[in-house]
Amino acid sequence: MPVQQPMAFYDLSEIKDRETLGEFVSLVCAAGWPDISLVHMLTQPQSLISKGMEPCPVQHSTEAGNSMPYYYLSAQDTAWIFETHRIVQKGYFEHMGLWKRLNDPRDISFLHSAFATRPYLTARIMAAAQGPHIDNAWRLLATHMDRILLASAHDEDRRLLAYAMARDGREHRALDIIAGQLQKGDALALQVLSYVALDMPEPIDDEMAERSEPELGYRVLPMLESYLIQQNYPRSFCGWAKQLQQGPLKYYTDMLLTNVKESLACEQPDT
Image 1 (tube, one colour):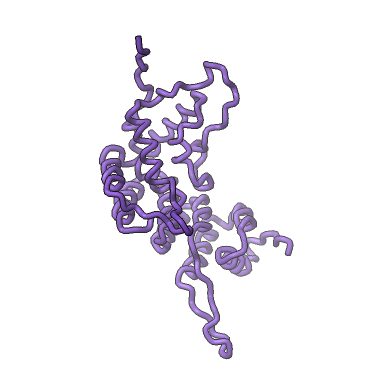
Image 2 (image 1 turned 180 degrees about the horizontal axis):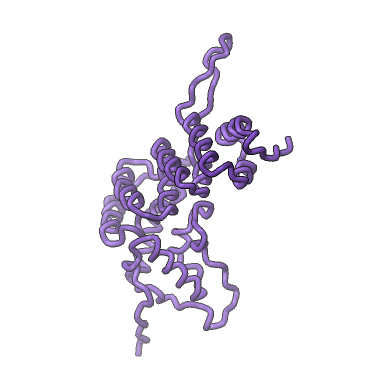
């Protein structure tokens, strides 16, 4: 006689916002079943995730009481997770390193349905993807992601949306959101700047020593300066600046620290 599968412990349709998402992650972690795929999809990039939503700690115990059975979710919800993961977060590269595009009508239809049935969850999974969503089909789906995460009252959702915009080549929109978060004193929004492809002044005429005006780069200076002033020059900014790698963001940050050294003197890294 076949063994009847117990009723699912959780229904993904209950995840409607950041609060209920956090409750779900806490339940999964408390059950000792950290690798449920969904949790890992929703906690990337980790530098942008608020305290209390970190990935579950790895459980090494094999005792029956410390592991959750596979039917923690219904078969339908489990299948939905794996299909969403397949479309949104896997197989970014085709041959020769080209980014994959969303061109299968079945996949497009699936994601439109996902936004209709599990809107917040789908928006979070799409925002946390590592590879860029760059074609027309993705841009249409991004209108749903933008609307849902912009309506959220949680800073984490806005940080992830800014990350997704930067990832997808929408740098100006990303900087708009980052600027808004910094105005609110959201220190973790500084981490999103590392994902924005900034430009730098470049020589125009060697004889005249003229340089270009970087369209994106010069937005960063007043944004960071306003943050420092509003937050009364926090020492934590020095720690963030110290871990920056060589590149445009470090260039602008070093320029800012030189300008404000009388108000915020950070220890200069060894050269």
